[in-house]
Structures are given as C-alpha cells and as structure tokens.
Image (cartoon, rainbow, N blue to C red; front, side):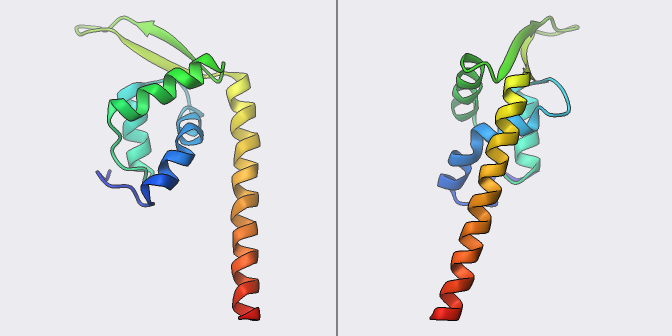
Length: 115
C-alpha cells in the first residue's frame, strides 16, 4: 500500500467513482477497507474527505447501497455494497475507459509515424 498514487492526481480524481465501484465487486466493504483497497491498487491513500463524498454520490445515484452494521466489541460502521445498477455502470464505464485508452494509443502511434 502506498501513500502516493501511481498516477497524477487529476487522473485519480477522474477515475475515483469507477475505482470505488470496482473495489466492491467482491462484496461489501466499509469505508476504511475501500480506502485500503484503492491504495493497494495504486490510487494512493485517500482521506475521508475525498472518499466519503464519492460514496454518498454513488449511494444517491443508486450505484451502491449502504447499511449500518453493529460492531462486535467496537463501534458500528456503514458498509457499502455494489447494486445491480452500479455493476451495470461499472461495466459500461470500464468499456469507455478502455476505448479512451485505445484511442490515445492509436493517436500517439499515428503521431510518431507522421512526425
């Protein structure tokens, strides 16, 4: 896990909704676990001020569902789960990101040949 992201901050911000959805594909997680999953995958260590607004936005959009889970021996916490709408959004937006990457690669390869 790294404190710093593998990519420039604007890229991380642009991909954060999608990255949060992707972090939930294996099941429900609480906010801190989502932050750890994102850090483990190169997004850097996010602060709550960056993560929780994204989770709230995704919940309002119906892409994640949140539930309060009582803690065993500790405080309770909100856990987030990917909804079917969120899974559809993830699939759709991943396809768009792949297309963007392929377009940029094609453009840069063409620029090298034509340059």
